[in-house]
View 1 (cartoon, one colour):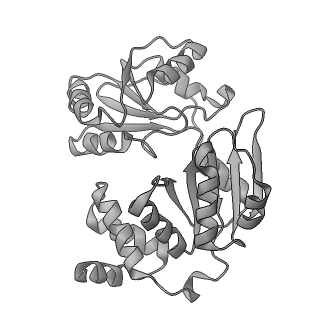
View 2 (cartoon, rainbow, N blue to C red):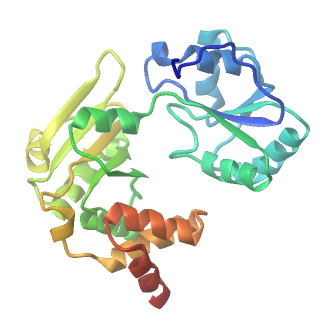
Length: 285
């Protein structure tokens, strides 16, 4: 018997739905996603203008409620209250899967803590699409957007240099040149990358090669970009372990709300080191 299931989708009361939206091509919006959004009580949107255009194109007429980094703390209690009253709510981001590189993560965590129901309607993801196109092996780490400047940016770049596996970054077009220069300085001009832009759109483009070659071309970047960094040439087991950088990664995860034990386990697995050893090192810091 097949594992596949096809059925009419009904939004259930008291549930927060995480709904993937197209990253550029409206034809990538699944029937299930559009059908569900037609039947929820409200849609939480990172930018109501962007989501409003998507809904208009799909014939969805549901109230939109803004949910972004500047109103997270005031919105979360309201969302929790509405879910407890039995409302059916959906969370979307401007493009792709919500709660990955946007404030939705805090809401999802709050819903879990309240014992309420979460359901996911998967959809396009720029990070996964770009990594699939790279031809680089798993595992990989997703960093989201780099800090723009200062100590935070330097610290993140140091983490990237210490990481032996594949890595994914998001970047705005006007910051691409600076980011590529910083990566070349940290990783060396021979480190291979893939850059994807305008993915799924008419002018979709992928470029793969050494950082130095990409810098020499001095491209004018347009559209949101995804940078995929190839794993280090040396095998992970031959690389010297930078315990300070691993501890910084653990601290960053815990500060973002990840339980300490989970953060240690995740970083240890990604870096290929002993979970106990990393935990003991973090305790000594």
